[in-house]
Image (cartoon, rainbow, N blue to C red; front, side):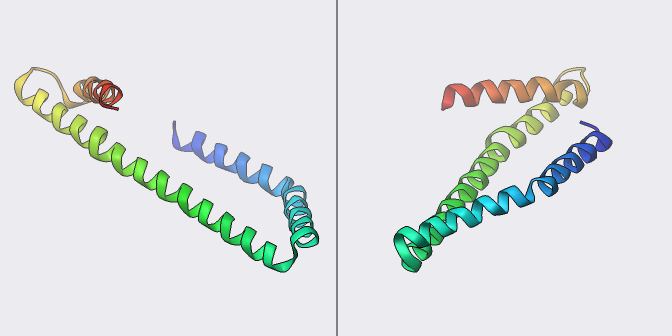
Length: 111
């Protein structure tokens, strides 16, 4: 993806969020009102804590996945591509996609 394409994609996403901000904030307000009406302010505090813990859990899982991808996919693929350039008459740019696929297949079978 080129820089201009990614910039236009993020601009489109931000435009969609700004257009739908009223609906999203209204939905959050309605949920907050429903929780306070049925469970009181202690229920709202509990729901906020649960939402925060859930968001933190998702964030830690995403970070863990990213670290694993770098550790088991990116670094071995780069090292294998470098070794391929030393041992075979191929360029680094030609070897890197092949080594990335090899490392990806290895990860699929490793689990």
